[in-house]
Length: 97
Image (cartoon, rainbow, N blue to C red; front, side, top):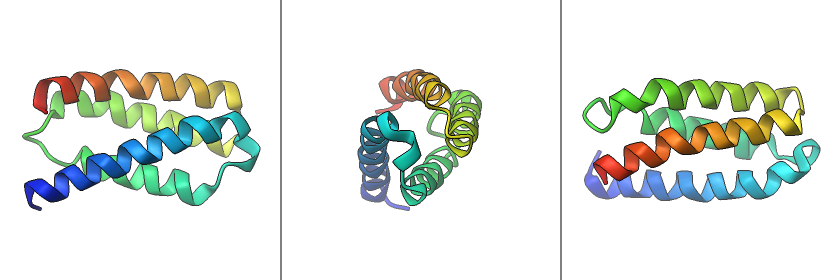
């Protein structure tokens, strides 16, 4: 993977995260394909050991919480997981970008 590809992955994750934030207001109507793509991008993003591995466990755990909340159509839990997702991503990007 080239550095440009990493940027594309991050940009796609940001776009999907923004979409998730907007769409989480309507959890029952949230497209499973969007959630699946976001989670796949997240797994890819956390597969680079030299780029923030110390943050990956927390982020991956939050992704799992979001996936479970989405599957349960639990809006409150989706929002809580989205908040939990934000901090490790912010910390990692602050250090490594």
